[in-house]
Image (cartoon, rainbow, N blue to C red; front, side, top):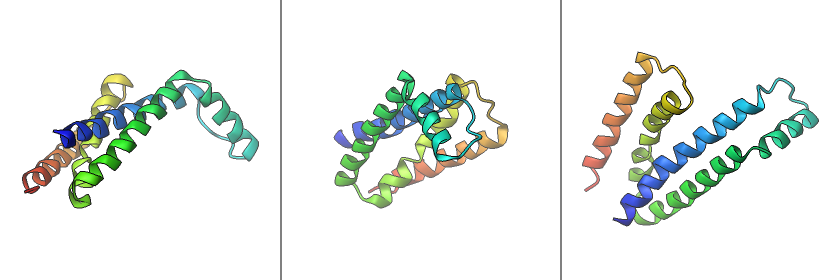
Length: 124
C-alpha cells in the first residue's frame, strides 16, 4: 500500500508541480535575453509568483516520494512505471493549460500507457 501511495504522489504531484511551474513561466514571459543579469531578472520575477512556489513544493514532495519508492522497489520497475506522468502531463496540459494536444501525441500517450501496463504486469 505504501508503494502505491508513493507512486501516486510521484505521478500526480510531480506532474501537478510541472503544470504550475509551466503556468508561472508563461506569466513571466518568454526568455529572449540570456545574459546573466537578464536571466536573474526573469528568475526574480518567477520567484514572486505563488504558483511557482506551489509547483516547486509539489515537485519536491514528488522527488522525496521517488526516493521512498526507490527504497521499496527495483529501479528497473520504478522509472518505467513513473512514465505514466507523461500521460498525466498531456491531460493536464490540455485541461489546465488549454494546450492543444494533437492526435499523434494522444497515440504516443496511449503507447506509454500500454508500456506502463506491461511494466506493472511484469513486476512479479
